[in-house]
Image (cartoon, rainbow, N blue to C red; front, side, top):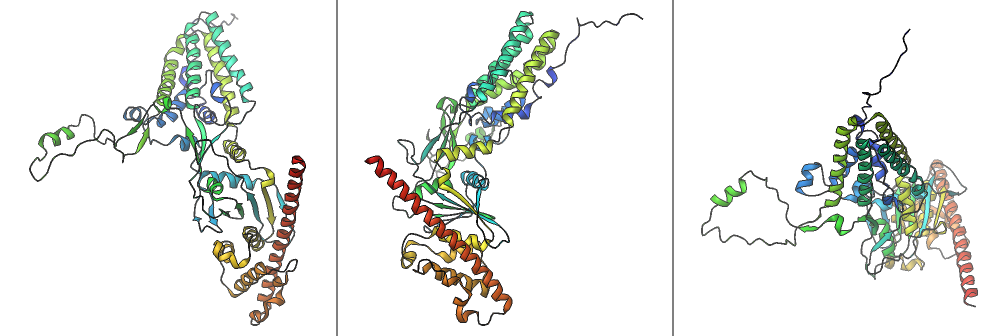
Length: 509
């Protein structure tokens, strides 16, 4: 039997066909982490797969007639397009200012997800459908100097920059080995991939994340209120300007001017180039005495929308597409060894992109928000109550202002409306229950819960049957459970304030 030999002189791996498509989704997902990690934009110097997918994806950020033709699609603001904005937050109900927001924004959504994952204190009592209530005391936010409502978010540090050395070293090593083997085609293509991906990471990741809040009046009442999302409620307490950062604030990607290129204040040009319509109207338009003089065209229209072109991002996207086309055409011209080296650099880079895309970007945003607002665990406490009625009473108690009940109306505090946000039922049983809870809140007696007994309802339950009395008794029992937990919370708050005050005195001494 003659020996079998393999002639590799004319053997070629056809890797150009998938050079730009392989690993595209992973590459796009990995690029979305470029703003969330410190020094991430400096670690993109490797031959990454999926250049065509990344180029087409981020090319839509470029906003001009030229770039819209190159990368057709809607021009979405970068913050929303990259995933730092766009989520709908829970409903917000203020307890004193009268503010009602049926839907909040991305930051309130992140805070709600963070509180849902927090370990809760179990409150003993009757159990039907459990509800969680998080008490959040907002600290005083220190906005950036020179601004009234902007706060720069610092990216978190991580070991990803050390892991990035693996694909970088692999790409550089394979590039050198191709040069050593005199395969200048594969050498050039690997080097091209290193440079294009590195430049793209640097440009796209050159923005800083800024928390932009809404402006508030210095004389505004406290911003205390509730973020309500199904069976989870966040009771937010603090100054109006601090609460606004959560309820109406948002993340914004602040790019350098050289990335935006320029800010244009002009009307959108809806005409089609070369269609002759504008010239036709200009030549044959009616010019009589009734038409009057033609309006003067201003160079800068103050009423027009402000647009950022992001030409640098468009240029990087164009480079990525050119990289794909170049690799598609020239990879078959390389030697077998060079093609293997090219494929090796792709494989290692793809694994690294998988590592980056596996990170939970939403969790990273939650951590950055908590870190920026200095929301320590002492300021965020979650309680799990067994029924919704107990959660309603507990939330209402934690929102009541520190004043006599006679001043509640002047402060804008309406406890009955807070209870109705939880349970809008208007049957006779629920009406009596709300009245008893409000009577207990107005009571000045310390340590007594007489208003939450069935006997305290008097003649109002004379017409109740046994089923209604039993239901009212359960509801009042839930209210007692919430009130007892609130008293425990007050005792702990006083002891915490006392310990902080004593430590301050010792420090001054």
